[in-house]
Length: 273
Image (cartoon, rainbow, N blue to C red; front, side, top):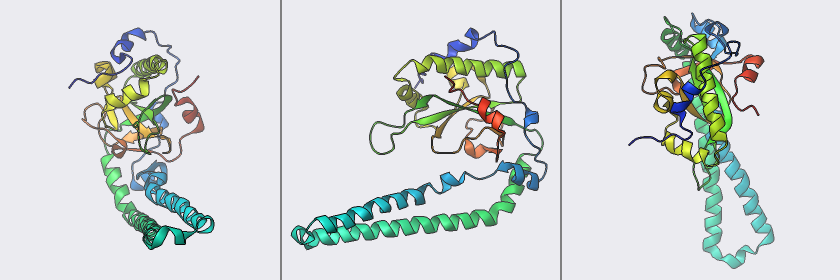
């Protein structure tokens, strides 16, 4: 099945041929070295952000925190004797199950964090080995101007941010034009109310799409990532795979800086008014 991308992205490369030569883009020299596991650990985050790992315990705690006050309020304002023993028992069981689910989620989170801490030295050695040889610096540019729909029903309906991940190994003029091409496309999409839903359909449940699929060969090495809005923003990093050649390139295939310079964060955005 042929994917239909909104905003005719394949037409924009030719339309942005004249890109100012002084347009800012970072370079490979903006990333710190990673010659040893110690250098990798100091500069790069080698596991998923804490907010991602803690999402389930936080959700469980929130659900329990909402359910218990409701149950307590019901005991105060309603005559439980009038609802019968079956409903009373069901209400108590519900609170107990929520408490057990929360305890399980928290325990699983703690065990997982302990395992991550113990495995950290080996993880750093593995990542350092993967980063040996050719450096593949990448640059993630946040594009909140147009967001990606996540559904039309249920609780998981909030839109995703769009992260444009560029390969910094390409020549500077090419990188500038790739960025300008994506920005022009986003400008066109921002005027289309149906763009979030159309983007969701184009992604077809995927979290990452090679821009070649939408724009053609001029954007080889550029990837479009869906990013949950609650997750931390990641900007400069190193790819563990070659983004020009692989069939899939996701957050698990890269390590990003622990602390991105504020100026880079300010410039790394496509949601300017």
